[in-house]
Length: 329
Image (cartoon, rainbow, N blue to C red; front, side, top):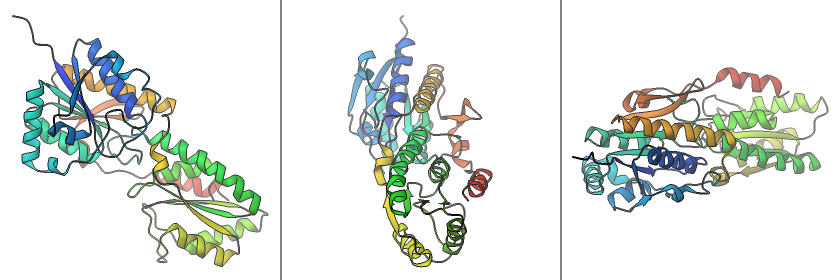
């Protein structure tokens, strides 16, 4: 009796991130190399419940490595938060002949993958989010590209800020995690970097700018993560800009970069990381292993049990933050 050819599914869930296509490509190519079938699932768990699936082949992922976004589209699925929705997901997998599933997304996507794994469908999670807020992984798919996008945009803003002796206050994504702000702030030479992990005051920013003004500097960059709170009760970037201008006399402008940070071609680092993670996910499913998250830890690709990964706490790199503060004088 011939052994049944194993089939795996792949989906992207939650917010899109550059590098997701690189991960999808790696999953498809690795699985086909190992003589496994691949079922693409459109629009995340919503597509799974709606049976919006198609057979993927080598050519399905041609010319996708360099593209941002996700070729499988993405969506959030409230129905998958309860047991009835997960049960429907299990039945959809069984009807489609899916023996295992690769889920590319964030913590919410991983919870769905865990629930589905516990119902007998082995699932592997890959961390795909620009915020770098997955505690179990040093770097997530999408983070490096987002930082480079912010750096490129701020470099352009600096040109006009320098021309007019202005201060540009730039809001970047990161409601609960300030990694984009921190890394981009260092790369852009920001005078101040405001992150949700470290309380700030307008007084401290103004005092620092005034010290720097006395050295002859006339233009400034301030990077603000969207999730910051101020001990002075000054919150939005527009509020911060008004306060800085009023107290320093430096003309100040607020810029919200928004969803442009999610777009663009993934960086080389992103493509390599996503490819390694995708291949590792297929290796696990080939062995029948599920309920795992594939992550980057100390420059190595490893995997953790999903609940263990979800229980980890994200550590903010305070040392790097202090370095940024010291060299931004």
